[in-house]
Amino acid sequence: MSVSELLATAVAALGGSERSGQQEMAAAVARAFATEEHLVVQAGTGTGKSLAYLVPALVHALDDDSPVVVSTATIALQRQLVDRDLPRLVDALADALPRRPQFALLKGRRNYLCLNKIHNGAAADGADADDRPQEELFNPMAVSALGRDVQRLTEWASSTESGDRDDLKPGVPDRSWSQVSVSARECLGVARCPFGTECFSERARGRAGQADIVVTNHALLAIDAVAESAVLPEHALLVVDEAHELVDRVTSVATAELTSAALGVTARRIARLVEPELIQRLEAATANFASVIHDGTPGRIDRLDEELATYLTALRDAATAGRSAIERTNDPKAASARAEAVAALSEISDTASRVLASFGPAIPDRTDVVWLEHEEIRGAARPVLRVAPLSVAGLLRSRVFSRSTVVLTSATLTIGGSFDAMATAWGLTGADDDARWRGLDVGSPFQHAKAGILYVAAHLPPPGRDGTGSAEQLSEIAELIAAADGRTLGLFSSMRAARAAAEAMRGRLSTPVLCQGDDSTSALVEQFSADPQTSLFGTLSLWQGVDVPGPSLSLVLIDRIPFPRPDD
Image (cartoon, rainbow, N blue to C red; front, side, top):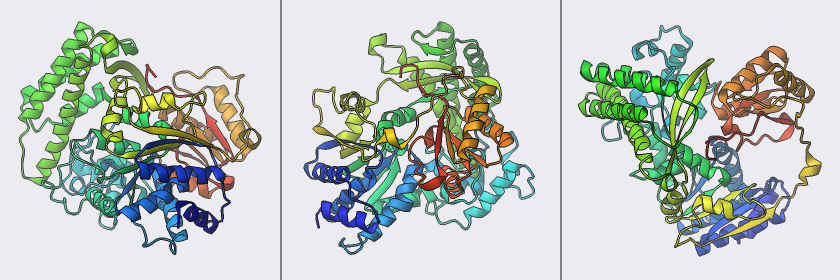
């Protein structure tokens, strides 16, 4: 059967109706796979674009016996594809395919339990983690909420098959999960880790290596592009869903920051691993750096002041010296603590070096932008020095588009009817050896002007830095949610604004209000979908990939349009 016939079979089996845009898109995706020409598809809401790319992806994966990677903007959309779309599609096409396709979900290492951290322990991480020792966190007698969560996670580790945070029901807050997971930098590696053969993250990678369709996210796609060793299985075909988010997600992975709180945590983490002189050196450099950024003016930094340069150099040198002083060890418990310490020191050293180097070229020739922000944490200002690439076009061109045939799709990819702006941002154009690509807009079956209402609360004062929070704004939100009888998705430009609004609504409304961070995103979306009166508040990751059909979602609130970087 052709791709067109398979799609028609699947749509009929799933109880859907034929859509011309969906058929046009599926045919274009199949042609792109065959001709190795990159494809950019704008498919409006209601097109059914996931089926339009999954059907040709399945056909190609089975015919060529090679995997197709599908990347989404968020883990929420990943779960939708793996838990709903792919199983239903495979069942619908069971009699039409030569064999049953295999698919796998692959996330970043932080999303999986680390058995070594659970059994051998390491210092509590994060700028806001408790100062109590890790032994107390894993003590069954621990009475704190954090200690109870970690004890529960320790017990869950012995029964879970996946170690995937989304499979923990009910979930735990981010702060608790961070005590039992590690970043890629903190990981000991399969060869050195005593739990290497049992590692949940490595087992997920193993399953992905055997799958026909591998579903991942843009962040992991970016890590795969910049990593020295491959994170994703080798693939010739890639589908990027919600592609308008690709540049920002890749930029986010390539963004680094320095804060006095994180520097202080690192100093405490290495206290027992290096000589006191090195601790004092790092603490002194941290204090000086903290002082200068505390007094700094928020915004983009085009010229590096001598004082800041001096303190960044001192930070870099202290972190480098500390990293060199930490010895390798075969003792699992000591190795885990050392791995986390080395990772933290490496991040400080690398970030300070990058900030210093970014001011070397003349302004028009720079590839990085540096800026200072004053974030609000628990009512107090937290200065953050950040550095990010001005463009990721070159990275995407050399590490993504040169390695695979790529299909990029979203509901919003054109500006003034042209794909050129997005193509330039992705790196498809602007080089001497531009890749072959074409754009296609299949429209939308919906008449948006007749299907919804856009309401702008023009009578309210403009939102400040923190977004929602004034008495007038909170009253407006409460009235809107009451009118909708719950059923509200609240999207906020900061977690602080989302939490503040959620707490305020819980005190005013009789309907339940959930907030991102209370549990894993997939669990929260599941609860939200199950109860039509529930509202869900959150930030950026809820802007994409949350599909709540039926009566559970009638109102979407947006506090303000977010602008993530000064040069955006």
